[in-house]
Length: 307
Image (tube, rainbow, N blue to C red; front, top):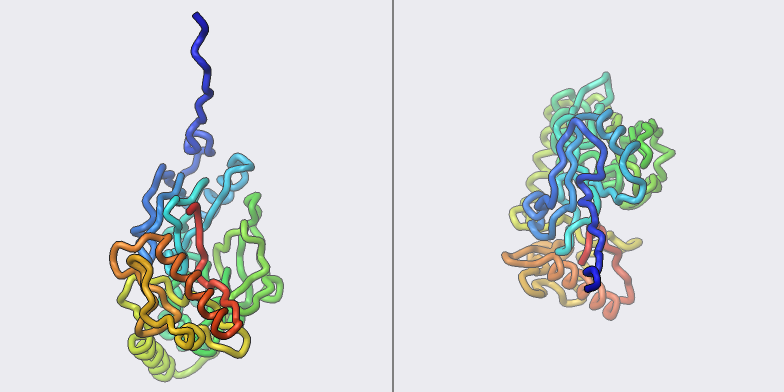
């Protein structure tokens, strides 16, 4: 009698990862931590204990293991098949915010709105626009986030970033290659902090501007819906929402996904949508806009993982 066929088993990823002081979670659900509330799990989720723990992980992990950085999930779409490899989420250890004269020094996990509040309390203007961006400083650096006439490159002095081998770099603003919703820092590098420039001003004036931004967001954007923020980047001299609206896409639906009636550059999970519904709707909108105007919209939302 012949021996049964031998099929080698694949060792689970989590057993091949280096020892850390932070926490690994296998098959970790991600849909609850993204604003769309859709998507599959992370093969392994890693929350580093601190900067040194993150550096050591990157230095010691197996070289072919993919790494994905995930912030507060406000401008991403995690696909239904989940994310292979290790997903890194930076926690409160990377969320510090401190004033240093006319500068604000913030960790990559610091919420943009909190940075705006600290700057306001310190009587520093220039960062009010961050009050209208639902993300973290790390995400703002990666995509040169902007709103209400300002971008992160306008206030950035320097950024701290770890390369894919765990080495820490301090880059001055000009070294990031920031442009409209883009950054030239390699995708595998992880932002861990930034120093931002403010200008002394009246605290009352700063708070008034922040109130105006909050009121404008409330009145023009579906901020109480399950959405991912602005879906498409504005083309040169055009507004994405106008192109979407002119192509007849306001209220367009696929499955549980819908183009917002309130702001047509926002896609919404109306309840029960899959990540595929949302991505397919976005692609349908892009196709209709191209047919109508000849403009090819570029996704601003980052789509992660396997379909």
